[in-house]
Amino acid sequence: MKKKIFIFLFDGYSDWEIAYLSPEIQKSEEFDLIYFSKDGNPVSSMGGLSVSPSMSLSEIKVDDVFMLILPGGTAWEKREKQEIDLFVKRLFAERKIIAGICAATAYLGEQGILDHLKHTSNALFYLKAVAPQYLGEKNYIDSLAVTDDNIITANGIASIEFAREIFEKLELYSTNEIEKWFQLFKNGVWSQ
Image (cartoon, rainbow, N blue to C red; front, side, top):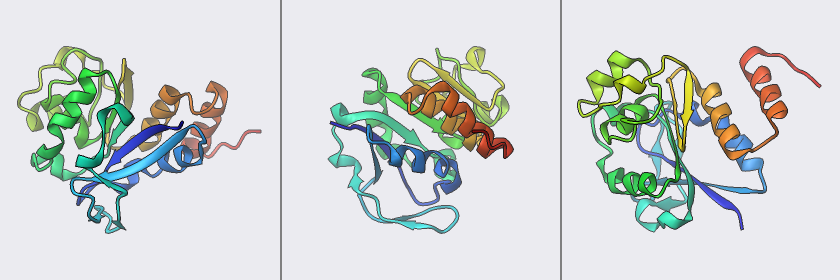
């Protein structure tokens, strides 16, 4: 049975932040990539891409989740995505893998998920300003992407690094193949 990876979509999500990781996961025979929204209705990305998710939040069973991916978007900063709070807290309590990029890292900080784990975001001052409940400053790392335990975080300009961290956590390819993929998409270096 395939392990299920869920990507949360909402109006205004940052489509480019999941653009590198989704095709690679979709090609895998080990994982099922499932897009969902609050109610299962179509959403439009920040770039105007209209998408019809496969599921609604209420249809997802926590036990079925292997990984949750949270793309960025200004909705996180405006606290418009509170419908996902209990779901994310349950996943975290059950040690499921959660990956957040850009403003989604502020959401994770606001939820207390980053308080005791190494993490990154768009900047420490950004995280502190956008997530008033955030208490993880001592664990902040000024890096493009960070994985600690089952939490993956990335700066909003690091969609390729974010994908690499996810691939490594999933063991999607060998370490060597992941590095080749990274060099190709980050630096344009094609190696055999």
